[in-house]
Length: 277
Image 1 (cartoon, helix red, strand yellow):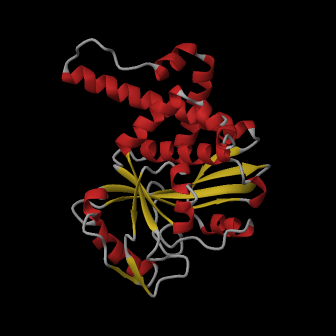
Image 2 (cartoon, helix red, strand yellow):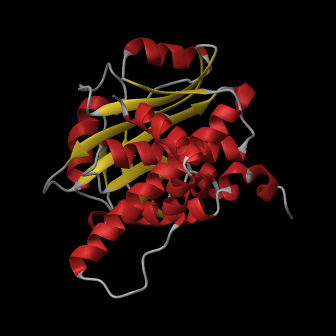
Image 3 (cartoon, helix red, strand yellow):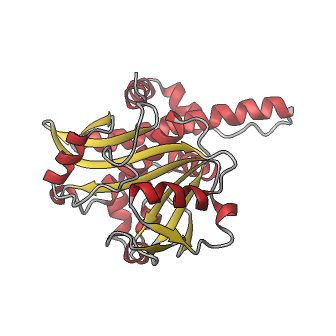
């Protein structure tokens, strides 16, 4: 079974079982514990927090009448995205430019009456000892037919190892303008990524400068960012040396998941909070 199906099943259990709800909200015991016990407690807390956050996000989206699906990469899905106004799919997530297995990439989608309404892609790669700058140079040469250079010296200290690339977020124009919907969709994608790929250390994305200045990176849940992560030579129009690298580590997301579990209204009623002066 896919992770979204797991989330939906566990969400139903948590809604009907007050004990599970309380466990997801509980704090680490204050009494002294061995390192082994503390690790087990932290792991339990993290898992419960992810489950509860997934439940909060799915409740918000299904309340608005959306069906939430985890879909495998395929050309017809990308064509369907084009049909609702998405101009392109980045080669990193394109079935035509990349070779995927059923476990290496996934699309998270929202549908109404079977019609695609929102989409976002995720791809998992284990870099091992390879520097992320070398990985980008090697893969972009094949995917984009372009060269990248001038990576910041501190890039390797920010990103490396087992990575999830997240991109191609798109909402049908008719369902935009809801911060609650956006935060629910993106946080659910984060939960899916760190649950589906249990060895993933970071999620990363590239954001346009205008979106960063409008606060979109914070709305997407990325706490760390780096301006000018690379310079493009003959790259596509939608890639730029002025874009930002956005990074979310697993520990940072687990902390945020616990925060949202304790304060679910920050997602469920985000539109009301954003409207306040």
